[in-house]
Length: 252
Length: 282
Image (cartoon, rainbow over all chains, first blue to last red; front, side):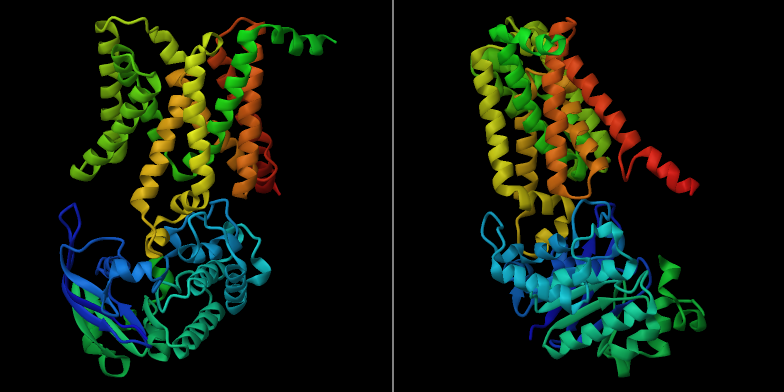
């Protein structure tokens, strides 16, 4: 079980916009942790810093005590991207996308072996996408698209899985399926960090919650931290009723 | 019989046989790379490299070294310059590319008129495959084969890099290396195509075959095949047309390729205009 520690992290973009300031938090090993905050509050930036897609101006991220780079090389972290980060017209099949999760284990030529194929099929099975494996990725529904990329994360066998807005554009049934799958992964000792707008569902499956708006405002168990006070502090002047029932589609 | 003569008659001329082989080879190399360039959205980058090689060719002739080396150094140098300016200023990429490649190109024009050499600027700009020398063929072969081998070995990584560079980083692959690998083979391809279509039209060979294939297929492997077939046949046919009608070889190749593109755009079974129209109507 591997924790994530974020220590005193500051990120400024090249247009001089301050995205994160002195953010410190810990993602406890073997838990599902929700990351919530308003748009532009730095959620994606924190994700990118944890995944090593950008280098912070100050502070550092440690994955089980290792630097991000070392953790990447050891295949510790898998990332499920937001839908609008993916080129859905790309000429690639679901099977090939999931196989990309195995590249880090393969040799220089990336020729898949029997184990790679087996794990890809098992991952597809876990998310219920076996029958769609030969589809071009753009031919999938919103929920199937998410499951395809979740399968890639599973094939990678990363102990830590980060999901960026996984419930955007997904129907309730698929959301339930995905939550079940996340709970199952937690039972298998995965550490899961998930950024979401669906505040209503957080208390149903997230063990811990981190509130983020430019910096970490509160973090701890969902039972203790998921309060009106913290929500108001994070989201500012919006009336509470609009937050509690805020639908993810509003944002998309 | 007429068709047979049309095909066979030119083959009695050694220079023409050579030209057909070289064009077909260049067509193949460009077709393969074209699939990656179209998917990555690097057409402008190809345009930039092709224009930026001009000063390299002139300097190479002046120093009496193979033109391919000079062309590659300047072509690749331009992309490094573009990368540097882009990450150190607030300018957008298209503006940076525009500034750098015209700068390189203009430098080439100045040099070619100042340094005494036997370079025919017209041949650099528009190609001269009918008059290609053995030395130039060897350079074309080396540049082209290197490109094919690199792509063959790194094809999966390059495809991942085009599709999802973030995932590549997340699994610990070095995306910087992939970026420069793709740029180098792009520069090498431009060098290989220099003698066939010239620098103005090489962009057509780098973009059109991949675009045709993208309209016709949803699988990358099929894309490669379709791209290669359309590009090689346009190159061979274009060379014939150029001989029979006494027109520019590069011009004939690009006109044919563009014609193929228009056909694909209209009649493609899934993504063609006709099909899309029908879907809207029904």
